[in-house]
Length: 142
Image (cartoon, rainbow, N blue to C red; front, side, top):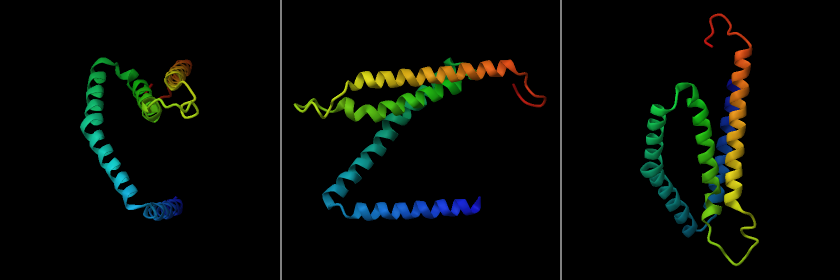
């Protein structure tokens, strides 16, 4: 196990070094834009997203039963991830070039969110059904 960790560490360091060399080849204007984008993303996360997550978690902790907390958390994380990935396409301006935005992205996002929640709920129901089928082993919590 230790050897695997060392190999993974060395591979990660090599890839990070390669990324730094690619980044250094960019012009100073591009490097400034990337740095500004990183700073804005950090500030946006700390000032907006993190407090909203705290408020949502606190509220859900009061309203959602403990047995459903894991299900809700997985669904919420998946939904937020899908929205963040789709955000550039949802917010991009409509241009005269139909090949740039050649799909109905809001409909695709809604379908992806619905499918992920359906799969999550089916998995939860299957797990609950299997758990009810077999009795708990002695010394193990149900």
